[in-house]
Amino acid sequence: MIVKRNIIRILCFGDSNTRGFVPLSGGKQRYEADQRWTGLLQSALGDNYEIIEEGLDARTTNLDDPRPGFVGKNGLTYFVPCLDSHKPLNLVILMLGTPDLKALFNRTSDEISAGLEELVKQVIETKVLIVSPPILEETTDFAKTMFAGATGKSQELGTKYQALSIKYNCGFVSGADCEVDPHEGVHLTLKGHQMMFEKIYAYIQNLKI
Image (cartoon, rainbow, N blue to C red):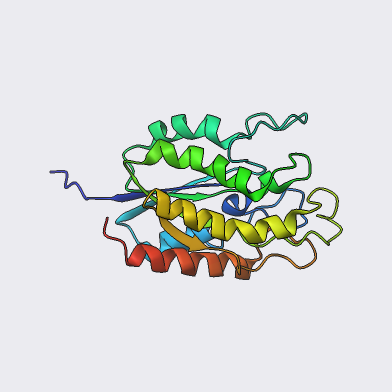
């Protein structure tokens, strides 16, 4: 006889900081599964939970990236089929916004928040946790051109995203103080992944799903 368990399924939809991009690796290296915040969640929550990783380098909230080799980076375009692919879901975690800060897109924090709102609207019947990304440090050699002017905007995203969570009755966790590599300024360190895990784990522990 097959005994069915009530598995709680959590979709983690994000960019390179969800995928586990190793700083200064050019995207060629990825933290191991048990080092990423998603993997840490799976280990801590146990077999009654299924953590679904949907992290993609350079994924935006709702923008197409016009550069060669960056097809498919629009989060909104992929989000709806992604939800269908993984349903049923008990919780959707959204952590996007950092790639939107690229100078290429010239977006304000209000525009980035509006982009994330388009994704939130797709899952109003499912519990949603909005996570604001870590503060970006634009003065590093890696970020100073690609992310020129981004630090102040990334600092504003926490307030914008929290307001969005109130508007749509979503959960909110700030990742602002999660550690990014000081020599690179964009991607989480191993400690940063641990910090992000601890914040999200604490939220889930208090959530009735």
